[in-house]
Length: 40
Image (cartoon, rainbow, N blue to C red; front, side, top):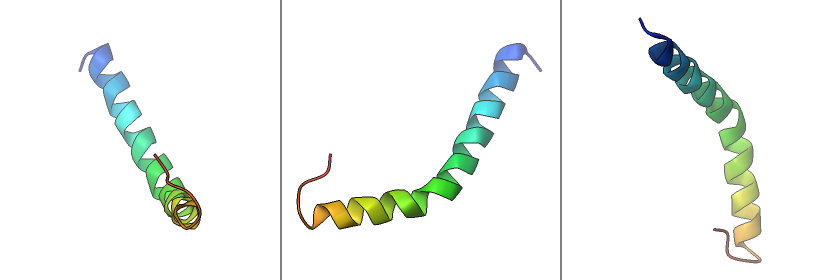
């Protein structure tokens, strides 16, 4: 397993963990903003 593979694996795991924790708050925030202004 090369160094690049290890970094990619850690990046994927970190993104997955961050997404699973932050996604509900992100979508809730986006939903609240969508009522008053467009969100890009």
